[in-house]
Structure formats: C-alpha cells, structure tokens
Amino acid sequence: MSGWDRRKTARLVFLAVLLVLASTFDAFSRSGVASSATVSQSRRTNTYNVFTDPQMVTIRGYSGSAMEPFISENGRYLLFNTSNVAPGIPVLEFASRVAADTFRYRGEIEGANQPGYLSGTPSMDDYGILYFVSTRSYAQTLSTVYSGRFSPGTVSGVHLVPGISGGTPGTIDFDVEVSPDDSTLYVSVGHFDGGPPTSASLTIFDRIGNGFVPDPHSASILRAVNKVEMLTYAASISTDGLELFFTRAGLGGGDPGIYRAMRTKIGQAFGHVQRVGAITGFVEGPAISADGTTLYYHKLVGGTFEIWTVMRP
Image (cartoon, rainbow, N blue to C red):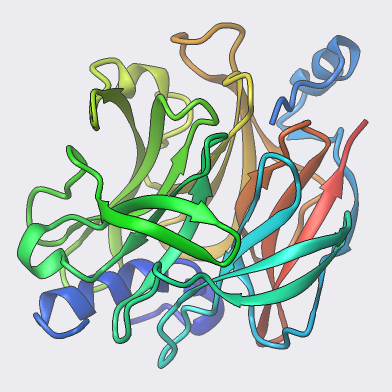
C-alpha cells in the first residue's frame, strides 16, 4: 500500500484485509430529520452544523479499539467490531446501555465470528435481523454479506444473503447497512488491483422474497453521494429513509470525513450533501440513532479507535 500510512488507511485497510485474506484462498461501515429552520439554514453551506458536543463513548470493561458502531433500535445495545489494523482480524462485539454515552461490555457476539476470518460492520433491522460482512467464503463465493437473528450475545441461523456478490475477484462488498424495515440494503462496493482501493461507492439493493436484487435506480438515487475520485462507504440510513449518513475519503489519502445527504420522499435521489461540521479528525462509520438525535462514529485518537457521539435537538 505504497504511500498510504496507517493513519491514512485505518478504515480502508478493512478493504485491503478482505482482499488479501480472501485472494490467498486461506482461512482468510433513526428518524434523523431536523427542524425545517435548521435544515434551511444548513443547506446554504457545504457544512451541516446542527450536530454539536462531540463526546467519547465509554465501554466499561473494554480497553481495545472499537470501530464501526451500530446502535439498536431501542438504544439498548451497541454493536461494534474490534480493530482492523494488522495483524488484528476484526471480530463482532456488543455492549449494553448504561447511559447515552456509557455502555457495559458484554463480549463477542457468539455465532457471528469464525476464527481466522474477518467479521465486522454490523447493522440490524427493527425485527432483530443482524447483517454483517465476513470473508469466510469469499474465495469460493465472491460474497461477503451475511445475516442471522440476533438475541443478546448471540446470532443464530447465519447465512449468506442471496443476491449480494462482488461478482469478480478484486470486487468486494465490504460493509452493509439495512433499513429498519428490512426492505433495503446499502452496500459499499470496493475495487482493488493489488494495492490501495481504486474505487469505493454505495449501491442500493431491494428485498425480493428471501433475497435482494440491485435497485435499477441505485446510480441515480446516489448520484450526489457517490463522487468520482472519492471513496464513498459506510452508510447509515434514518428510520424514515430520508436522511443518509456516510463516509467519504480522497483516493490520494487524507483524513476521511462524515457526510449527510437528504431527500424529501422515498425513491427520490439524495441531494444537499454536506459534511457534518462537529465531527473532525480521522473519522468514519456513522450510525444514526432511531430517534435521530445521536450520531455515533469511530475516531482515531493516537493509536486507538474510539467510538464517539455528537448530538442535535
């Protein structure tokens, strides 16, 4: 990964690990709508300034790096994965809520992790179906998106999600976000040519029966979100489906940032793309709470990834 140091690759090394581990054939990223006054004010700039007060989340009993946060619909559980910085292999963990910015570590999510294989980027619908990515079968299937039923501490019935596949070696679905009603997936698709990612963008998949198919309007819906010469990944959708948060980084390096896009109706294209102004530094992996008041994300502080929040009315 010539020219990309640890700080420049922290989240994107997740993609590289996926490719390297899989290609060797070894065992190896909600209501959220602010008042019309604040939205109108914010649309006049390239920065969304409604979120304020960045705070680190405390996970009692846990001392390692924590990345890719997801907060359950009732706010009771914080799901995350461990660090993806080599030689570590990310695994899925969870914690239970003590307060808005404090959780108690409960351990690994049993059934989601497989020794020697990456598991990460958790997302869950309102019915308790957990979605995540894992490299456990990429060499055979070119697929990485899995799901299963979550209950505190475990996930059962883990299986590949039908219809989601990179399709060709070097194309990897490296994170997944499910809409609360389980009708839509927002999948980050990355492309590699043996080094740093050459592209990364979001694609929408719609539920059909027990699987998903690419939304025929995905490219137009996400035209303002996916930007040429930028890496776009780690989506988080609001409960009403009208507000999309995501991470964007430059192909040449530099700190990634967290962005927000809006639309007024389901099926319409997202627009009004703005960077979330209160979130600074090396930051990735946004996750909006069900009530839209709290945005979780991870941040690189020194050599450790921490989960942080910002708040809005």
